[in-house]
Length: 146
Image (cartoon, rainbow, N blue to C red):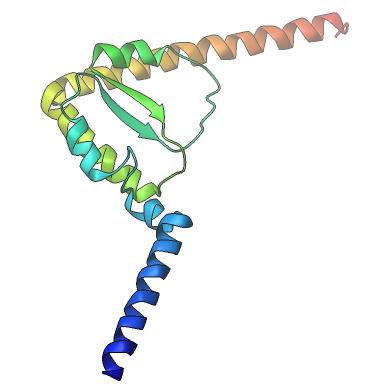
């Protein structure tokens, strides 16, 4: 009888700890993604959407901007900032499911075409950015009398 009471007490303490650390402190959600839009199960459901969404967790500020949104829409997907509600591995798992579906829809040839277009536009934008920097340098040196 005492063993059952001790076992029940330990089980109750364990469940309370899991609940507190997992749901109240968001640890469980962070490492599993359950009950978030970034879980594996949500990704399996999102594969049926007409426009697939890939999530990023980094806030990259590129030196030059290209209109990548419209290119992505042409290929049936979009990229959004997903925040830091879940771990990187959870976001990576979600994106792998969505990317697999994207590759089924597009195929490798179309995916390579998309990457080529993005690279080409990035190169053009970088050349324009560098030429703008060079013209600003020459304008500032001519104003100083050099």
